Image (cartoon, rainbow, N blue to C red; front, side, top):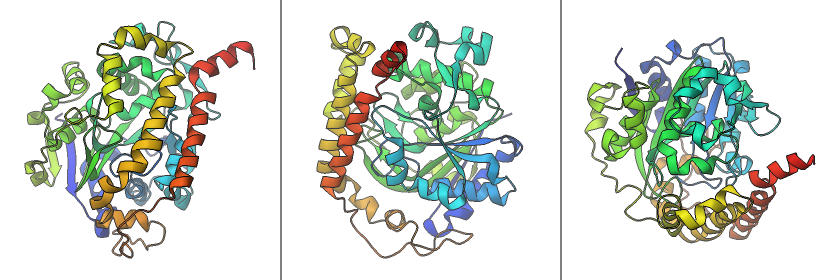
Length: 422
């Protein structure tokens, strides 16, 4: 069967109805069994709010509202978070108002690193490991995945944005944090191959894999943080993770098969369709005629992204990358938090976000929880609040807490603690 991607335009007043239509256009009920537990895999690319960086509250709300309307049982749905050393998922779910949505519906909220059992990949997928492109070399002793993932559906909730490692990021990249428990940065030199291996794993362990991508805001530049966000009013859904990433890449102005190696590799191996010509677009086909012409992540890189490229693929690879596989690795986590949280966000975020904050979506975000929702959406987005005013001192205090966690919870130190029996 031809891969199908549903695409619609939306607005706050109709966003709930639009998400319901979107999911059904993509025939999600053919993929997501109502009898199995379903993980709503929330994306937090930055624990501070930044448009296009993380799952939006109306995206999460729209999916849950649609599923309950279609007869899915609340007890079989749950929010799902992974932890990244430099991202605090608890802070992120609060700052991005995802927790408000989960609590409003009374769903379970699972953080995979807290009390969940992880099992070795060889025990989880057996002979499939022989088909891996790179993970056997990156992790000779194997790696662990959450046991709970085996046998449950997963719905990925990415946003439309660029990425300094993979050009674009979306459904395939959203599995990265959830399926690799420690030392994920070891895969950065082979990130494209890694995403293909992770898609193989997902197809093996999940009875249903689906993606719902929010492009109400879309991010250009050195993402998934430090971007230039734009209001685009688009939402997408598909059961083909390769196809939805390809369509999003094409919307941003990229050639999926030429510019996105991970899409090309997955397409060549029959894991999905990355060729736009062979993807059936349902819904509002005119969206594909838009020309976003994004610059991409490499034209105006930040200091941090330039250094990352030099370390993983450039002249610093030989002298520096080795340190990221030793107890010295936390230097990189600390540097990332200091640059992004204590320098870039306080200095640049307000000006970068301004246009988005003044939009209806920006007002809806700022007034989330204070405005009334209808079956259709949010007809009243609240009073105009043109600026997201942050208490800089409080934000820096939060950054210092994240910085402390980078050291305490660094996998290199955690492994030493386990080895010593502490």
